[in-house]
Amino acid sequence: MKTLMIVCLASLPALLFAQPPDSLWSRVFGGAGNDECTSILQTADSGYILGGWTGSFGAGGIDVWAVRTNANGDGVWSRTFGGSEEDACYSVALAADGSYLLAGDTRSFGAGYYDYWLVKVGESSDSIWSRTFGGSGLDRCSSIGRTSDNGYLLGGNTISFGAGNTDFWLVKTDATGEGLFSYTYGGHEYDECYSVRQTSDGGCVLAGYTESFGAGNTDFWLVKTSANGDSVWSRTFGGSQLDVCLSVEQTSGGGYILAGYTFSFGAGGADFWLVKTDANGNQLWSRTFGGSGDDRCNSVHQTADGGYILGGYTESFGAGGADFWLVKTDANGTELWNRTFGGSGDDLCHAVIRTTDGGYMLAGYTTSFGAGNRDFWMVKTGPDPANATDELLTLVPSSLSLSAFPNPFNPSATISFSLSRESGITLVVFDLAGGSVMTLAEGRWRAGKHSVPFDGSGLPSGIYFARLTAAGTQATQKLLLLK
Image 1 (cartoon, one colour):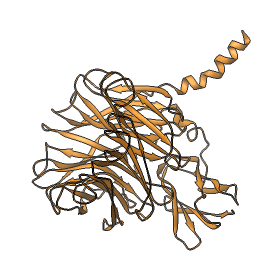
Image 2 (cartoon, rainbow, N blue to C red; image 1 turned 135 degrees about the vertical axis):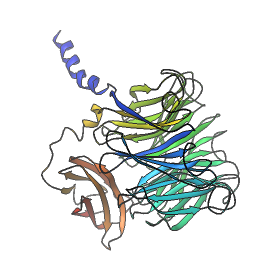
Image 3 (cartoon, rainbow, N blue to C red; image 1 turned 90 degrees about the vertical axis):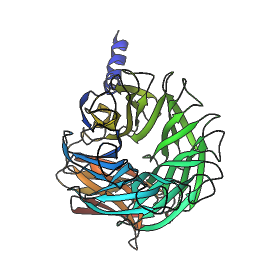
Image 4 (cartoon, rainbow, N blue to C red; image 1 turned 120 degrees about the vertical axis):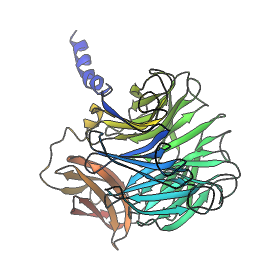
């Protein structure tokens, strides 16, 4: 009996941490036409910026639509951008100066049919500048990522350039949106990119699907580049059917997590598909989630406990039609819990983010609620106990601090820092000449103690400096790499 009691008590924390968080509130924005939210980020004041497109408002056709809310989801402002043709936003980013970047495509402006379109928007909703990139064919931007030099990476696909049909297209800009370089990646068939992220070595990864390479039909395709855009390696993942990657992120260990949907594996129809790789893109494991209906994952992020949060939609479960579907896994991809949100109509989640209170925000569109047809829909959950494991359970320090252990090191160290209050931060490693080597952390972080890995295996021996910037204050730590 005593043994049984010990087992039960030991299992209690894991059981508590495996409970899905409750829904706190949801908000709908839209008009009589079709309005679809494709991307969302949390802002410095704990509010939100939503980007997508609208057929209800604007200049004509469909227009880019940005909606700014406060922390409770109440609308602060909304603004459309576009001309008489079709213009849409598919990804948003936060600029270093607190403004917003909307990335997508335009038929109203540019060189030809569809072009990449990048619009910078101020905190008061004013347009600061816009840039187009493209040729005479169809060029569509799906994803934007900010770089350590405060420039931007634009990822999508192009027919105007490349090897044939559609190819991955990477465009690098400076902080003012001026193009620095562009590269295409692909073969003679259709290859389309849906997600781009800068990597810790200053390069980037692009993910989407390929028909030119792989096992058959379409496969997940992961392309790793150098800081100059040169292809370093690429990897395919898939079976004989349709497999499409829609989201990629570098993980804390230096590998990558890819998410999308698969028809090659799983329970039937399309299923969520999660693929984990090492730093060289070699597959470590993969997991499917779904039922007999159509289940597609559009967004993935690593969580504080080393696991993953996946957002998308399901037709296998929920209230009817398609519903928002949130799936939480542990670090090995084993499902801990899942949760649906929706009504009797079609409700499709395009993005999920982890919020500063330890909960999640889901965004997409709903036909179950709102003004009619499709409307922007955002759903806020309460805190997930799993996100408390490394942050919420720590004491709040009285000042900014930065340290490294071990130091000297070979080839990796843990960089630890403390924040006295919730802040937007950047943690960048520089070489002795002052050149940026890699960005270890950025974005908005809670008050408390944090740590991130620094892998110096690709760097020469020497002296480096880690610099933490938070709320206008800086801390610097000298690093000595000995090989």
